[in-house]
Length: 79
Image (cartoon, rainbow, N blue to C red; front, side):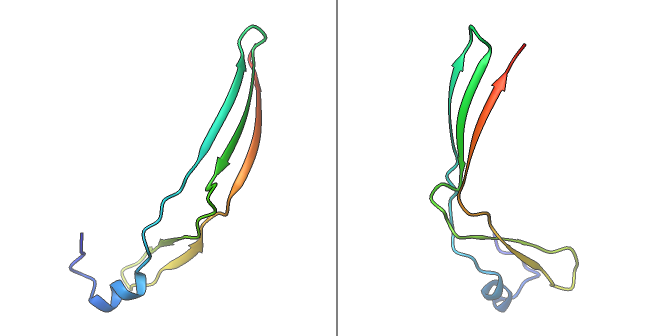
């Protein structure tokens, strides 16, 4: 949707190509022992993107680079 308060120039300055992020998580659960081990990945395709936010009506904004690919090893024990 187009915001009527923004001009064509504003949209040119704020434009960002569409992107998708792929997050994955795979786990093994050992119910008899109450353990779970998992590996999780965020942005596994290492997509380059930015997060943009504004907090005022003056048109200023902040552009923050998105997180690169990251992997996590997780372990959980239930009692």
